[in-house]
Image 1 (tube, rainbow, N blue to C red):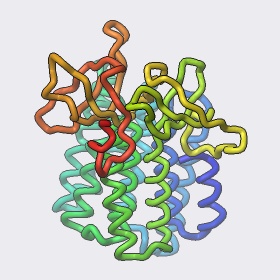
Image 2: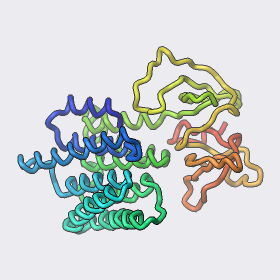
Image 3: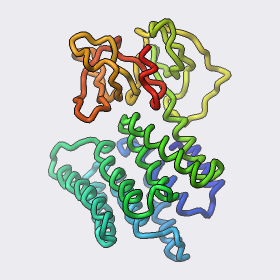
Image 4: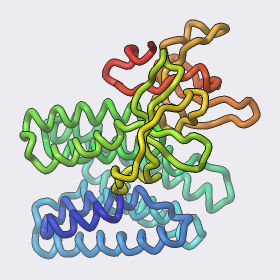
Length: 338
């Protein structure tokens, strides 16, 4: 979620406070509390969300329910957690505790979310005491998954607009944590359901389809500090057709007229974190050939990509660049092995 998208929603959906809060939530998830510019913007977003909540309470807005209220408090808490100073950690703990208490008061499935928030509160307390912690992106996923499962399985059902919106937030969190395959499969499901139930012109359908399109693009670099979109393989995978250069932020507008399309040797491309890839050409671990996963790291010591495989019983593996191929079609990845 970029500033440009946020500005668009502010102009086009003025008065739709529920939708606006959801957009603010997605924007604050994209900010890095360790950067001064993002910290300032995040403070403004927190103030906007609290102001919108007060306005909705005053007007008796039916869109404002306990679930939305608790979610806003949770996101404000997580933003302060990301900044990380002792003062902000204390503030994070306060908002997270309010969020937890609201979910507990709702009872039923919302207690699952409360349990996940308890884990976040424990992380805050650990940081205040100087302990090491998992990354913010990874720890966010447990709460986002709990939110989505709660809405889909026990509250509104999979066809409800609110379930789709929560699912989109989960997909965004997954993508930002480099769980691209899971994010894509979820968005394809959400887009199909929304299109079938609400129609292609519905705002939520369009928003979900837009996000899916952004996440479906594959990006690489070629050692010159610039990013390119990978389009396809040629010559039995020996070369890759790329287009660019393109902005690093996938939501920034592209000047296609200035981009060039050309072919480079596959050995010269570097995968972006989160890239869906397929293993191939392995000899010692030939049983893994054809497995797909996400690139979530790079081991400089062994000069290998760290790939988290999609199979439930498969552990992350370190794989040489030449034994990986980009997966362009998640729906039918094995056709990319040729």
